[in-house]
Length: 83
Picture 1 (cartoon, rainbow, N blue to C red):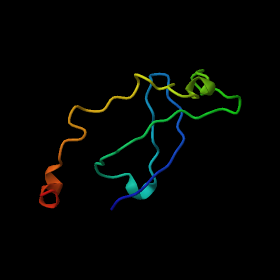
Picture 2 (cartoon, rainbow, N blue to C red):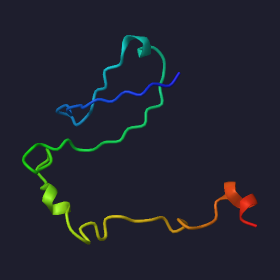
Picture 3 (tube, rainbow, N blue to C red):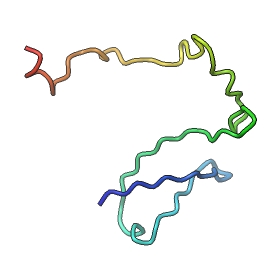
Picture 4 (cartoon, rainbow, N blue to C red):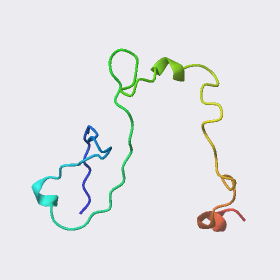
């Protein structure tokens, strides 16, 4: 059984996030995949204080995004279609 849980969590003092589970999911082990993104407040800043306006404009992410060396290498799964 796969379930999707969407929650806004606040970090504990030790820097951990605690995800409350519904009763039907409280037993067993789970694989968890998480996407962590800051919650934006209404004043143009993220909760950690970085201004959202700092991320606007051409080239604002220069040097922050990297592709792996083999990004455009042929994929093994598609080798039958590439001949």
